[in-house]
Image 1 (cartoon, rainbow, N blue to C red):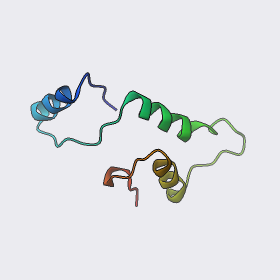
Image 2 (image 1 turned 120 degrees about the vertical axis):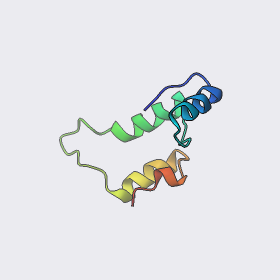
Image 3 (image 1 turned 30 degrees about the vertical axis):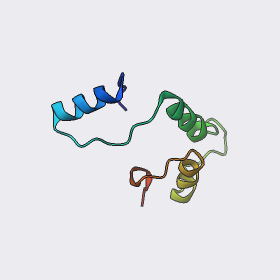
Length: 71
């Protein structure tokens, strides 16, 4: 994960490193994703999420672009 100051900063960084622009999220979106993803991580019955469960988390947060498709 990289943090940027603005959309223009993202564009400059991508141009500098000759990389395509990927998915960008706000700090709030990253926080909501982390909260949803790790909410049960310390529970004794924790297990890794299945692909379907991961997709459900992404969809619940409005993350639906190809970048979030795991299969």
